[in-house]
Length: 467
Ligand code: DUC
Ligand code: ZN
Ligand code: ZN
Ligand code: ZN
Image (cartoon, helix red, strand yellow):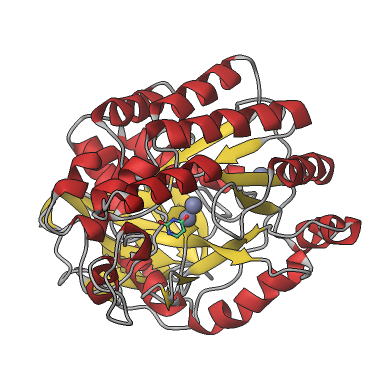
């Protein structure tokens, strides 16, 4: 066999126990305690370390055209960065163009991703145009192909109205698919943007104000109600506010299959960051919210109403963030001329696990949120999400003692700054394996461009809030 990881403590969402992991041909071949080392090409000692499933980041935007530029991590840089933070699968977005069949949107993105990705990946298909029956029906061929996950935006010019959202929800229920939603109230957001700009309020703080707790919360509540009406499951991405958390919690209590994702940036930072000198570096949508909302998200994690953590990784360089001061053409900028998004794919698993080291959550919970739940929710639990015989050998050896201070210098993406600069973590990944191949060790990326594969996901069926 190829590899034995011995003496480690295995952590899954359900269990913590001491055992050795045998890997062969990219799969977890056996888990036990009495292997003969002579049977293995390589033996790795994981004494005093945890052996975890690789994380699945359900939300990244690699090479995304946005705000007059392209997010600075392409599929290679983004997946390289992911690997170095213990994330072995990323879900990116394939946004449909007007009139385009949905599977074609995914294939168009995959043509770029397959050459570059260093770890495995899949897509959520962003639905923008369901103006004809044929386009709506084209969801089916995507599901059959192995992409049963869609996303709609309630904001942005490529967003959809409530009627189209409802149609997509109904169709998803019929097909065994899941719809994710970016929920913010578009009309109120535009109104507030125009008001603040006319009053000369241009700084990053006003980005937050125009997308405040209630602007997001109203849309979260509406999205939950649309899903209830359509009797369809729903996944709210990057949930960041208390009102939305309450709506999700209530719907789940009533038995609805409503799921929420939040992101490390909402758990760690508050709207105070927009008062910083470089507050524009933190401009992302939705923006960081107040302390009350952050507390509600942590409560949601504790009581099981947050189902996943993902990053919304979408980095831009500082010179692009500076378009909020002076635009590309030299004219004065404002908060609407800052490309939206921040880097995070390398920070998610280390950050969430460090919260387990600190005792805020359990290691099992960290694994559940970052690996097991996304694998079940998106239909790839036949491949990923646990340390289990037969699954891909996507494994992380984690050192709970290592002290690590996040710096952009130490990150492996292509961005020139990080909002996480200076944040201190206790515990850090020591090594990452992607299908049995060592892709990260002791701070160094060891993977290869193009080694990542598109993972086909199975149909989804959710009867209630349990996965
Ligand atoms: N939010 C971001 O911050 N960036 C890209 C897309 C999005 O919805
Ligand atoms: Zn979004
Ligand atoms: Zn996003
Ligand atoms: Zn499954």
